[in-house]
Image (cartoon, rainbow, N blue to C red; front, side):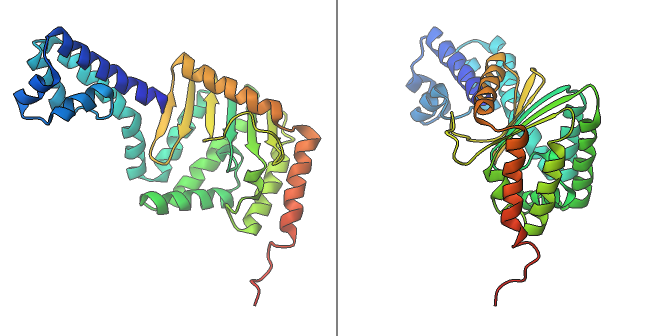
Length: 286
């Protein structure tokens, strides 16, 4: 998210600098186009994103038409950070999963942190169906869940590549939250137990009682050291600035320091399985 905020602030700062260089007040600029005076201050503070027409008018007012194309290109780059997500949603879950497949095919080192869900590369088909069904219902996207699940499972082929390494960290809560029916969760936990034994997979689980080094605001995927993918409710962020990648690497290391691995991690999974064993398959009371 900070990539987007920073890009918007950079545009705002350039526009403000152009106005000051032209020795125009905000009121003078607003009056020229019949804008509310507050519009100029909101744009310059980054609280309002200018339109392309706003930028054209601004550059004309300050006598710097040569700045127009570069500023519009910057604006479109910001829009792209959100636009690709919206485009993929409109096309359904299959296209979204295919974009992840393409990114993962070009990755050799995976570092994944998920606070509430089992990472897609470790999901069973039933658990994946629950996740994609929720997505379709929430966003109102085309119902191509069967195709989406199929591609998500195909993504897991990378787990068997000798040239790749995987480090997953999840909170213990992801094992116990009601993200699926008990029967589905049992199957998913069994799959997770098997994944923990895979030769190139390192699975860390942060116990409920662990003192967290930082608030787990969202999950993130670090692909090699080139990009971080972060999903929010309204967008998927692709972070590529070295500072942003470094911050997520540091955060991942912090979570690594409090995660349990090996036998201790398997015991946490086994405990979650034990908690579900008496529930799965039971009829509703009454």
